[in-house]
Image (cartoon, rainbow, N blue to C red; front, side, top):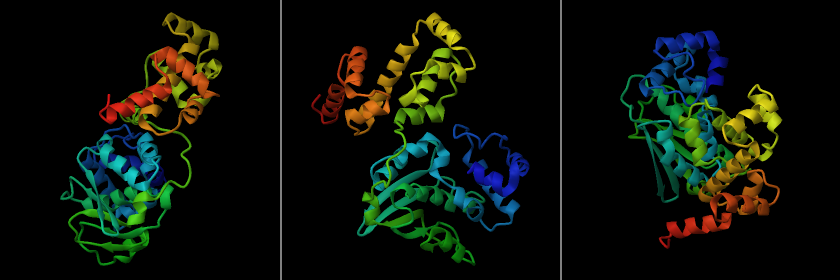
Length: 326
């Protein structure tokens, strides 16, 4: 949403608005920044007043997207179905919103997503509520776009002009309701992603993105760079250049740390493969390609050497444990 804010009000005015609600200038620059929800709601109200809009939705709604939540946004939208994406969002909301929660319900021909906002009685909540639903609706984009929407319900007083809300959401909008909700046709729950995700994001990636600061020590920094481009991470000169040092210096400093670059790359690939085996249903051939191996046999050999078990063996053991057989 930061891009939309800069377009709407400019960087100088943005800094002033952030300061007016006691938020630091860099509060919107990373999904890792902690922003108290009450301050965020006050900020949205300030934005609406600044641009002369009756609701922040009409100033920022087109920019409200789960993509602005970093790797969390990628993770929830790479599941096979929209229903699964919403279930993952429900389960992981605490990564970004401490006390809000989702409830998913199947009612007759409807698939209903209820959003409970913890601060729904706070001043200027009317700017937060519709934007929260706009973010929820952005999760549907890779699966079916704007199809299957039946209605949106808002726990807000009915405004004089409801047409602007209906134009934005593209469906019937009801006010004075007990919860924020989006009601879809039941078919939405099983709608599949239209295009394959460009890359696979794991829960470990989400946790590191949400909580982990940039690595300060050399080996973790190199591991992070290898992981970021793992399919092509075999050239030490590229890594050295990104760390602003020569290849010779990087090799020497890794040697001093008791680590060889080739071993580090192999370990990072195997660690990522382990996450994909445990957290996705990708087959071993595709996982091998995703972590940078040209053939699954190469992954199998590296995996056995570092873990003592084959990739298929790990997945089988995990499945048996989940089933209660291990």
